[in-house]
Amino acid sequence: MKNFFENVLWNSRYIVLLAVWSSIVGMLLLFILSAMDMVHLAWEFIEMVFLGVEKVHFHVTVVSHVITAVDDFLLATVLLIFALGLYELFIAKIRVAHEEENANNILMISSLDDLKDRLGKVILMILVVAFFKNVLHVTFDDPLNILYMGAGILMVSLASYFSHKAGSH
Image (cartoon, rainbow, N blue to C red; front, side, top):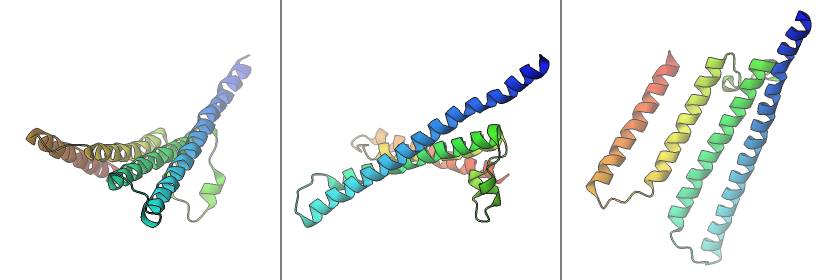
């Protein structure tokens, strides 16, 4: 009875495959949707430049779409790292990744803390991108808005600095 229970407990780790596959599907969707958004934006640019279609505030639209795409690509990267990390931690080492000479260490996870650190850095980058996306819509009609933006930039810089410091030790 004890052996059966231990086997059931040990094999229950395979439920993690649901999270792995769901993360892979989410990653694919984000990559495809963001790439399609960039193609659509490029088409609008072609219409404006070569076909003479009038676009109002096109520059702001381009910057906003590009920042959104970067944000989505970063989130897709989080999902990829999360999926690979869960698989390596709970199921098995990815043999192909460990045999390849040019394998990137960011995709090889050795512990839960390692996964947390890698995800934390990418999530910090997502927050930085989201902050700068919101900065596009700040109006400078009030001196307090300028102060808030400066404080926000300082906080983002400090978070990036401390994240880099923590990663180097």
